[in-house]
Length: 402
Image 1 (cartoon, one colour):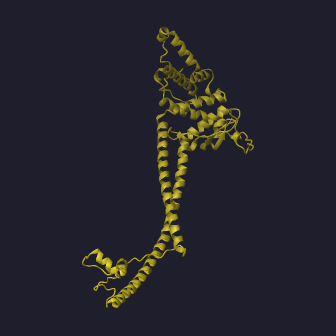
Image 2 (cartoon, helix red, strand yellow):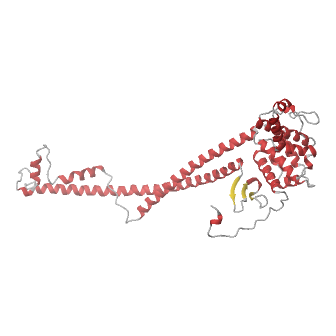
Image 3 (tube, one colour):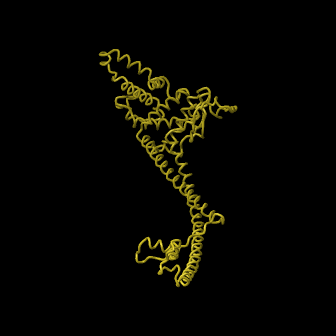
């Protein structure tokens, strides 16, 4: 949302300009881009990562100060230009010839020949792009056949950025250009190198790595949630065992006593082993009917012994049930102790998974920064904040360039 719509307005801090920064906004942006590019793709382009120039040395070199790091930008640009000529290169590189008679494909790039080879490369790149846009080769025959297309070709070529840069180098060498022009030429070479096969492969591998880390993060998150749910269930179970009000008496574990109790309620009414009539059984059990069977044990002589035997069986069942209850309590206590031991193991596994999650999150952040710089948004003055990890952290765009 727009921050002007907030009700609790707070005064924005007055941010000072970066200390030691003496470049124009556009030149500073190109220098930051160069530093990030070298840090991310310098290894695949053949740079020695231990001897890469720092941000301050790049600034001093582009300013042309009398400093030992004055030639670092020239050496870096020579290496970048060699990589750009090899891949992606320009169409018909053998037809573009320098003032010394060398073709662009076989020219030896040194600090002394950098300006001339860079001028030929920029002019060839501009011709290639204009030919693609207009569909013309720019030959004299095509100009005679279609003067309008020839005029469009010339106008597009004159307005092309690379052609303008080539005209700069046609007048003065690279070291004599101003700060903004040096940074613009360097930024153009970097943008061309984004089409380099090694750089593209590095970007694709970083994206694949990023996606695989996302999958791993989701799996770790699912495992951590399961373990937390398991720990929560164990805590509820242990709390119910430790609370005597909520603790239920465990059921007997012996199946024999359970079978005896299932048979016990029907002994008072007698059994009908012969599968007799249902009505006669109902009459035997119903004392209000006034009909008593002589074989029924309800009013017979064997009534007392039969109940005595039932009482003895009930006592025996009660003793067996009490023993089984004690056994079940012992089993529950063993399970409780086992749950406590399992909880310790679960906590250890959970802690290990959380550590792995932190490592995966850091790797996710690193792989995301290898592809592009993180745009943190704009403020009310439309100043963009960028996260540049290889340049020291977040940078807020200045008022002069926003």
